[in-house]
Image (cartoon, rainbow over all chains, first blue to last red; front, side):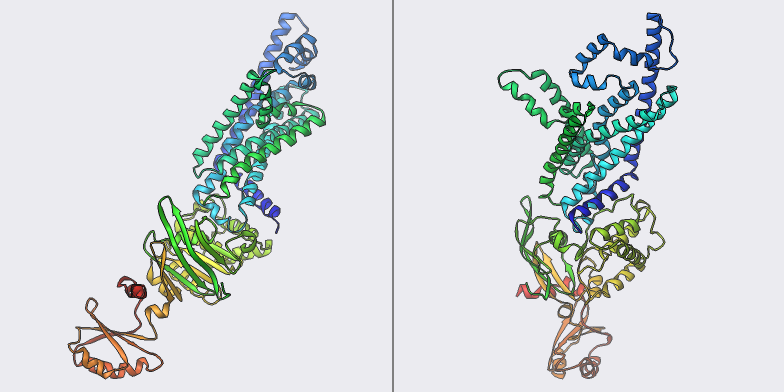
Amino acid sequence: MSGLKQMWRVACYEWFDALRSRRALVVLLLYMTAAVCNMYWSINLLHKLESELVTMLQLPPSEHTGVISTTLWKSKPFQRIMQQMAQNDLVLQDITGKHPVELIYAWFAFFYTPLLVVLVAGSRISEDLGSGAVRYVVFRISRSSWALGKFVGQALMIGFALVLSGIGAYAVAKYRLAGSGTPDLFLNMVQWSVRAWIFSFPYLGLAMGLSLLTKSASKATVMGIVAITVCFVITILLRHFTADTGWRSYLPYLGVLVPEDHKMYMWRNSLAPLVTGTVYLITLGFCYLLAGYAFFRRRDV
Amino acid sequence: MTMDNAIVTTDLVKRYGARRALDGLSLAVPRFAVLGLIGPNGAGKTTWMMSVAGFLHTAAGSIDLLGCGPFDSSVHRGRITILPQDSELPLESRPIELLTHYGLLQGLTRQEASQSAQAMLTEVHLGDRLNAPIRSLSHGMRKRVMIAQCFLGYPEVVLLDEPLSGLDPREVAHMRSFLTRRRGRQTLVISSHNLHDIEVMCDHVAFIENGRTVRIATMEEIVGTASTLVYGLTSLPEDLAALAEIVPDTVLTCKAETVELVCRYNPRESSAEAINARLIPALLTQCGVLTVSQGSNLETEYLHGQALEPLLR
């Protein structure tokens, strides 16, 4: 049996086992609830804003929430404001014209996925190291197959959670926004879930790579949370300290090592940036995992 | 390494900080032997097993497992299994699916893995708890699942660290019988503090102290079943020299603390029946005879230091 097949067996069992883990289920349910509630409240807010706009501008009232927002999206002054906020013309160009519901969900998924990853997967490996469960496996398969299998299993689990939350958010949109429950919107929501899933890879690699360093599940979770915070902080610092000349002009290259730097690719429509971003993010995920594995392969279990 | 040995470890050193858990431990386990590892707490028994299974990285020394060098999952997968100490199984898993999964990982087909898992769980009397979550099983039941996973797919070498601790008396008796039946078919290494269990199950014994092998011998050499007679007496005989004259081809020793007379003989030159026929009448003239048994026992030999004599000499 090849190492790849062994890895796949571990991955499938890990996914299956993770679905039964009480903690993972609770986090998954919380995430889904948050996605659904976020959608519900955002639509309410959108509805209120539109009502205010209708009253203020004395426009004819529309039947569906989102119609005015969609019109607003297409106006040049509004696009200029958004351009300044997004700091990326191409992204703005690609998201213009998308249904507000999609954008609300996409923002939610991209923002909270790192936290979901750390809470669901951050301690899975260290739990096995701490309890000694790893000892029943590593004389049957190689350590690399085991670590990689755990990573892929958790990736499947995160993907499952994201798709479920996407479907949940779509269901709310369909219920709250009459005429919005189109198959197109459903497919787009699933597509955003898949993009968020790809974006989760580096965080998954980071969380599981750190998990390989310790036998304490709580320590692994804390390390994961600290790591994603550090990633965010680095991204912000890079944005503000980069200059056109001197050593600070090289800072953007450092951003290649941080997942946030590749997030904009995932907002794009065309295939080329999506593929580039996917390759970057998945590679980054495996690199983080590999760094943890380099320590794990030499440690006692 | 010759093909007569399943495991050969030479001068193994394992350090935890300044302390040496293994301090040049050398041990050869004969193929198809059931070897008992005996030693005080912290002697290095568990460390040795974990090193052999590839869990620990040693600082020095060599390990040769089944003639293929140190543990390598690509070479030894399915050929060696271990019951590690203090290691929990995944709590949400079910025994049958977990053991099937382990069987698949060690290279069995799905059908073989499933059949082997079912057979082993039935063997350890968990046939009615195949689908119960591990979390819901008692400590003893979990231990039985742990033992069952060791025998999936008939591995050549099985390392068992305290296999019978935590089991109820009936299960202990059953597992002793199960493990004893493995003699001559698989190589088993059993670490236990229960010397009676070791004596019943094992045909070889290794004594380990302070990270070193003190002695390795066959059980026969240690307890001398075929070369020793032990007489339980009402009081110690007054004239040992007179008794020695009656059975000149033997060595007689009195044990004051247990009020026993130990008679060591060469089984090629004499038999237990012949010695009894001459010695018992003479003994009865000096004291009462309560019991006659063949051989000593491991506990006596270990506790009274006689098993370690070869090293001390």
